Image 1 (cartoon, rainbow, N blue to C red):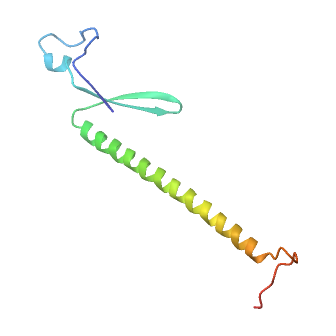
Image 2: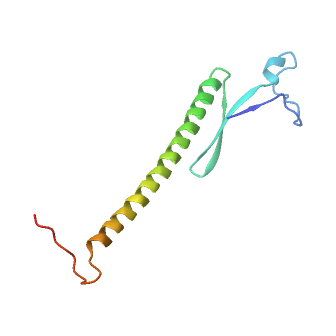
Length: 104
């Protein structure tokens, strides 16, 4: 979400009458996102902007937590694979080439 200021470096907006200065000058709130490979820009009302800002913060926090969970999961899988490999090698008797079978 982006908040635009009072139009620095842009041409003056002449779509509103000069008497209505509040409509001509910001702040303007915009939400920009990708949909089907295209950038979509939506203008938000001043009342909706805080809701979208909070939702964007929650989304970023969720992404951070999911990345941490993914990293942890990969680490656990790597350790489990090493443990399984070491158990497999412990079971195999390298001198005789026989895998011992334990009684049931």
